[in-house]
Amino acid sequence: MTPPLLPEALPTVLVVDDEVRSLDALRRTLDEDFTVFTAGSAEEARGLLQRQPVSVILCDQRMPGMTGVAFLKEVREQWPETVRIVISGYTDSEDIIAGINEAGIYQYILKPWSPDHLLDAVRNAVEAQALQRQTSRLDLELRTSTRVLRQRTATQMAQARSSFGFDRIVRAPGSPLDLVCAMAERTARYDIPVLVLGESGTGKELLARAIHYASPRLTGPFVVENCAAIPDSLLESELFGHKRGAFTGAYEDHPGLFQRANGGTVFLDEIGETSPAFQVKLLRVLQEGEVRPVGGARPVPVDVRVIAATHRQLEQRVRDGLFREDLYYRIAGITITVPPLRERVADIPPIAHQLVLDVAAELGHPGATLPDEALACLVAYPWPGNIRELRNEIARALALHDGTQLDAAAFSSRVLQGRAAGGADDLTAAIPQSGTLGERLDVIEAMLLRETLLRHRWNKTRAAQELGLSRVGLRSKMQRFGLDKP
Image 1 (tube, rainbow, N blue to C red):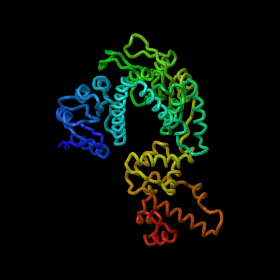
Image 2 (cartoon, helix red, strand yellow):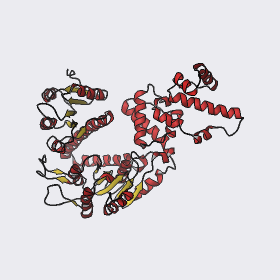
Image 3 (cartoon, helix red, strand yellow):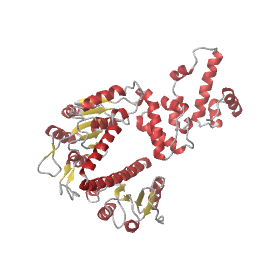
Image 4 (cartoon, one colour):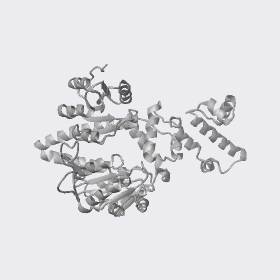
């Protein structure tokens, strides 16, 4: 049954899928953040669109009667402002290309989808629609007041430069990132290619964006492409563009990212994942300063700065014959390495506090705080996924925790076990350097009790079993050491 028409308090999302189970799973994933409408067919969805404005459509590709791409092509013609997303369990490149060209889809999501990825895609789609409307308003203003628009554009540019500047990269005083940012800021002045190395989740794109806004190209576009996210057959078309009729599904000319970024910066993330065949084509573009769209007869000149990034050791991949040496030297004009979070532990507290503020605001929990005990758990964990993992952990904790104070028990067992496994260094730091043997042993015992209780989320039965104590014995020790659940 279709939900009743509601005032647009939340962004509206229409989910179209002929499988009831899939429809319910999508609705449950989205209904906390969006007003969700559902339809079991293209015909039902069409009727709803005629009565209810919709921000985003998520449509299954394989449906009886009409494919998702065919339906979204109709949507593009009748409701062009609605952002269109296809969900499919099939990776047919012709379907993907047809979706991009015929239906103008915003994203192609493959099954099985993850809730986090789906939510991020829909949130970004809603933001894209809002930006599109804002751009339309600005275009209208351009016709009536060039001077006002010019002033507003300059103000927005200054705001963007401030928002993405090097001083907005959160870090502690004396952080290893200080040298990284100083080198990047100096590099930004010169129009030479930059290669950013670092593990996944360390903030390489954030650094690249800061370089762009500190460079003479700041008034030009900053465009991003994750080279590992799409296959080679589509990557060439996405970056270099294609001409109408170049391949099945190419129904109109499509300018590539290099053309759209003319005068600005192209950020090629995970460039180490590209194939040798694609590397040859990219090398030619960088050498000649021009792109040849797929199916095009003549090259198109482009003026862009390239910032590339990868978590791979490209020099080793060059030695292994997996990455072209000439391309490596072309993109590595200056190489900057972003250290992982475990090598800059002092940065964890300011980053964590900032993430708590940002994520709490996104989730509608303003005023959330991170007490010292919870922060100690975060500092002790090695964070193999770096800042991205830290953000996900904080988001999870805020979503599942009641109250404004995010205590340590709100974190996952993985993080708590990382805290408990701190080892000899943690013990040495915690033991007083003076006092009797009994007093020092009491400190160790109290610390072990607290770590165990934290990992078991203050479940006394499980903690007592692990420690080989009775519940009465554990309670007695808790009283002795003043260990109460926060």
